[in-house]
Length: 377
Ligand SMILES: Cc1cc2nc3c(=O)[nH]c(=O)nc-3n(C[C@H](O)[C@H](O)[C@H](O)COP(=O)(O)OP(=O)(O)OC[C@H]3O[C@@H](n4cnc5c(N)ncnc54)[C@H](O)[C@@H]3O)c2cc1C
Image 1: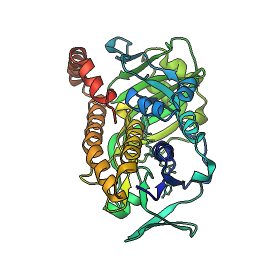
Image 2 (image 1 turned 30 degrees about the vertical axis):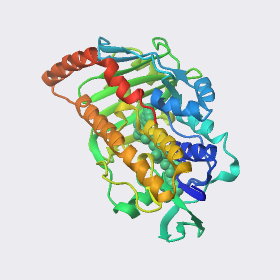
Image 3 (image 1 turned 120 degrees about the horizontal axis):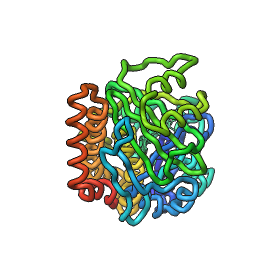
């Protein structure tokens, strides 16, 4: 394929796509609505299926240097007793946790600045026989051979293709924060603790920083109290095992971010003609399996693999969608299911849940991990 592509959206998905396409020799231009490419967000996990792609793009060393490898995942009860412990390893590339801003910067750095423009919010696109024209809020209209909508869960590209619809709220919200390392955090170990309608996760993300997250069943779109949120979280997790209290105590309240758990039902088709979707624009998911960005990274690698040898952009986009839709839909549903189970409140059902989870994870851990982490684009 010869020609130029537009990527709308400079999150992890849009940046990886731009880097992968640039490395594949394709003329690509990324437009991001934010005024600058800022370093934002909290911690995140990046699993071997995605680090494999990062390695192929030559950014894995930088990412490993900034983040922290994961050697074990512990699923715990609030008293600290393990429901399950899973050793991570045996994959060609590592699992790791990292600050989102560090991953973002690692993807941005190898790109020529001329490939990226901030402060450009795509508002619509129009396709004709010669290509696709993307129009931006400030008046810019740019023409290319194809458009990749990587503009997140509230994607404008998706809305034009499939209609405007709100994401689906899944009944709980998530607070995230970053604290300095405290006693009791084991480097390389990440954990999630399952209580009743609440969970708490701990992830060392490198450079002496620990990311935590807390979930709670609640009505959608509630705002946090302007003061006292940190204290409310400390109270809510008062009886839970250490170092949960220590992490909450050590967190600067201004570093606590709240988000509602939302996703969308998987689509049967993503794009049309010279337009396709990527990342959360295509398959937003709840964060329960830590795969949203990993799937966006896989999407990017898949597109860059198919485009150079395709006869037309539309042909490459349809082949890409045929390869990606089923896989990402499975992960969207898996994430939703785990969130649903993890947020159960009834104490008797919780006992059965914990017992059944222990059995399931003990019996087939390799098969389950391989299906997700062993995937090669
Ligand atoms: C609490 C939480 C924890 C998570 N943890 C993990 C994890 O551990 N591991 C993991 O893999 N995933 C995780 N995820 C999911 C992950 O954050 C997303 O799946 C991922 O960020 C999606 O990347 P994206 O580039 O597709 O979308 P986004 O990150 O949303 O980026 C979209 C970009 O497009 C821009 N944009 C939007 N509209 C326009 C427009 N009209 N024109 C131009 N630009 C536009 C936005 O400003 C943004 O920069 C988590 C999500 C949440 C909510």
